[in-house]
Length: 171
Image (cartoon, rainbow, N blue to C red; front, side, top):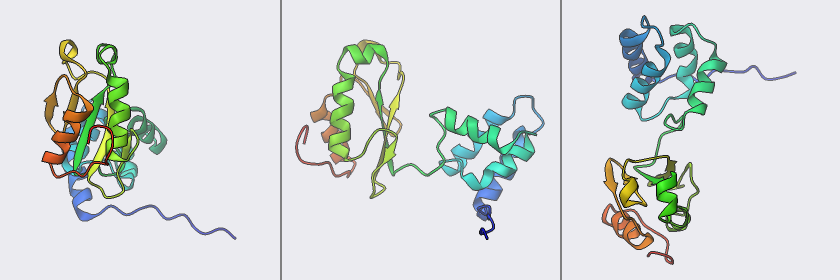
């Protein structure tokens, strides 16, 4: 005999964020992406518990909504760390050393790309153009852009935010 499957229950704050997003967007053509953006802006992520309500509001299947959330790197299903570090991986930055910088960032932070460190201090993400193509490699830490980034400068910026970095390269 199998256990019954129970859907996660959204918290009151999650329900409120969804209700507000639905009120703003549900009647618009193409409402799914704006609705997801609103939910993520309000909650920092799109909780799996909200997928059934989102699907119903935009007359889509849960699978379709989940597919959109998982397809676009911008959306996340779990909360990000207290700080988000994005390393540009686009061609211009690659030509200026962003691959080595990305590897150094993983070593400094002790987590892989698309991951959040176990202590919740930081999430590390690739991004595919920050608009600083002439001054790469570029990094965005939270909402601040940084050009001509090196592992050493990255370690300094993170330590200034109170993020512990591992000893070794750049530290």
